[in-house]
Image 1: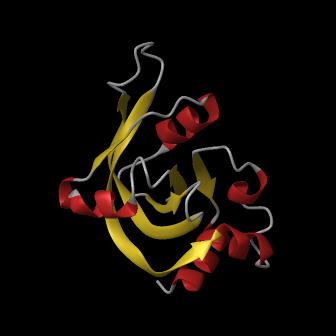
Image 2 (image 1 turned 180 degrees about the vertical axis):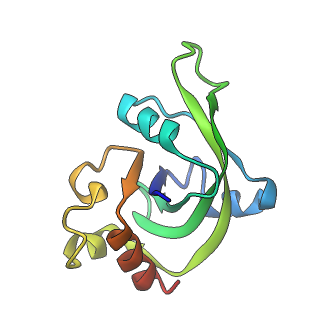
Length: 137
């Protein structure tokens, strides 16, 4: 199964808000980048991803799981973009900061490091294992 990273500004949608949704989860909407759209379209139920706080904090803070595959985004008036639904699975015991990720061996090719503007991105199995270990999960 593929692994992912979802970026969210905590002032717009935080990890705590995601956790508060419980098992029913919520939609991951508002994506308006075509590469990120392709990533959303590739996601399958059960695949997991890192929840990353962007702008404020700049850290991976937890793990979410896809509970509904790609469907139209109700916030997109153009009808070109879609969304998936995700639920919180597990918080990190400690946040893993972007600075830490940039400096850690094995993470130098991570998309988060090299294309920081992409809001939804794939994560390799090796990157997943390293970041999870750093986060204590």
